Length: 225
Image (tube, rainbow, N blue to C red):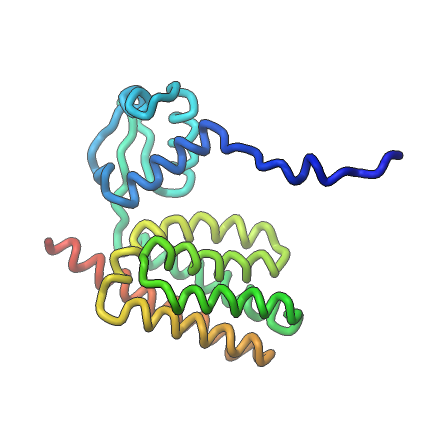
């Protein structure tokens, strides 16, 4: 058999129209350009985006599966309004899965993996841009999940990470939001680097508990506006 070539694997595959529509709609929801409770037309949005209705519909099906929207038969769709119960359930799942990940991978971490985690933590500490902060925060948690080698855990977490991003940017703007969150990531990393699975899992739990508290406090203040 001929040797495999790296040429094909090195080609950057452009995103599909469905993926472009998905990202555009997701960002519009996260920026509150699409308002929870309002009903929107798939056809009108497709026309505004300059694409056919099919990729928009497929993107909305994925957004519904991830908990962002409700599709309405013959009426279009509406953006869901997250409740305090939704947020608490989301963090209940995150705590369970992400503590399991930390316990599983800490004893097996290689030097190169710790170096990569250290670099991500350093970027989290340096940035004060909410978009960049969320990107690096997601990279940290996603890399830990990837190291577990369990695709079921990773896929389950991808859904709740998306929802976390939806309400996450606003809490970073609160006083001390960036600094405290960065310190929580650093603590997780340092216990993992020291090989202490239980202390790393406890640090992850503290991080997710404090994040949940900030989410719920922000949620309560938004309800009162």
